[in-house]
Amino acid sequence: MKLDNTLSAIVTGGASGLGEGTARMLAKAGVRVGIFDMNEARGQSVAEEIGGVFAKVDVADEPSVDAGFEALRAEVGQERILVNCAGIGGGIKTVARKRDTGEIVPHDPAAFIRIININLIGSFLCASKSAAGMMSLDPTQPDGERGVVINTASVAAQDGQIGQVAYAASKGGILSMALPMARDLAREGIRVNTILPGFYETPIYEQMKPEVKENLKAHVQFPNRFGQPSEYADVVKFMCEHAYINAEYIRTDAGARMPPR
Image (tube, rainbow, N blue to C red; front, side, top):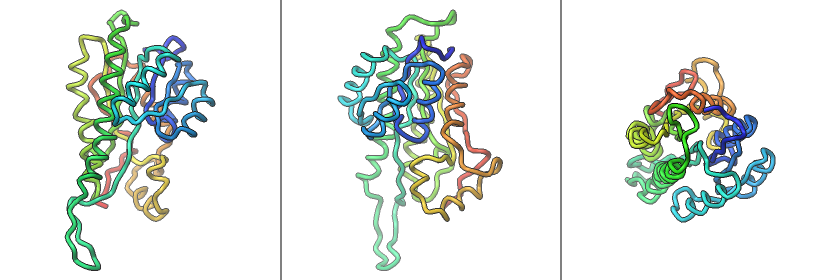
């Protein structure tokens, strides 16, 4: 799939971090870009800068997702590319013991459900509804390709840290969707791939204390630094353009393996 002005794309979580880097890359290639995000001010700003459009969307809420697709498709047309970057983090142990009182506290189920709903259910909702729209299009390539869905998991899907049980479960679910979803959509000419980013300069990591970031960076092999959103976007570009990459996942982590804490 050649990235140019004949295509449109929707990027969830496109107002910041990996999503913003992806939206900027796609727009630079000429693709008409739509952004889903909850941060209306930032989303509008990024959309204006790249010549795209924005819709405030809660990816875990089906009516909100439906309204977002309807609004953006009216502006940029039916997307052939969907990149799911919307997501949240969280740090709660399965069961914790309070140091001061010794009280035993199970994981808050509401917090677990919220992370699953946004990260996993949100990715599925957007992927399913985007693919349904792609199926209405004619193929663009001789081999019948109609579109591509790229989901964002995390290295935590494979080596989640202490306190990441909910986050790792959500990202592991995203990783596990790749093959069956690709099989579901194969006859329709829609590819599905997954990216597992490691430590990137995104809002999740920007909120960490400097000493915590330094500890994480110590586990990065080479180059010994956090990744840039533009580097994540390079992988998106590769997955869009390489027609033989399907039902695959790629870790982009500079050789890092997440420590227990």
